[in-house]
Length: 227
Image 1 (cartoon, helix red, strand yellow):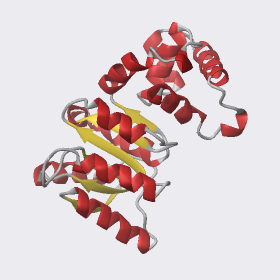
Image 2 (cartoon, rainbow, N blue to C red; image 1 turned 90 degrees about the vertical axis):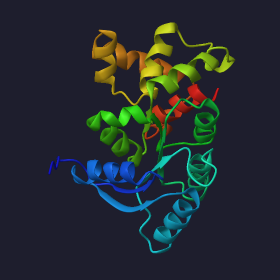
Image 3 (tube, rainbow, N blue to C red; image 1 turned 180 degrees about the vertical axis):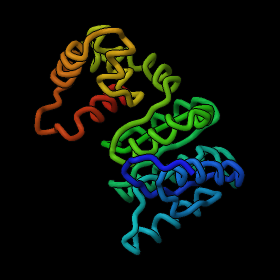
């Protein structure tokens, strides 16, 4: 068993493949987190979270497959959106086999914190997956680079981001993936101070005041992707 010194989070997993559901459970529990429930369809997910919330045990985050029974189209993401509307403090991380821009956009629309969209291939990197779950549970974002790339292409044409320089757009794209300032500095091969300056300029240009300090990073990312 591998137990790391991290804040324990409580998770509900929604995945119709029993094998994958058990695998995700093992990945999380081996690292000290608690999977409080595992379900196989969207209706069961909504019902289970409602019951937990009714008992005063709302989980920190839900990990849900986009496509689940009975039609294997959008049941999972629809359940995730419904849960976000019902429980503002619940983090939602959805997994998908492919980038489905419509679903990603709908999930992100109106969110202020605690949201993620990863391709299932990303689960193969155990540390990256678990870090994403913890980050979303804590109110942050975790977006797959391929999702960011597709939404970025659409976003570039919108006026709300016209004020950003190409480098600021690049920094914001890496922020959307959930990277820290230090990680961004390493990726772009620039100083930590340079990244901090770009981030400050992004906040300023997007009109995110100091009063929004707790979630300015998330709000900046969502402004970027929802534009």
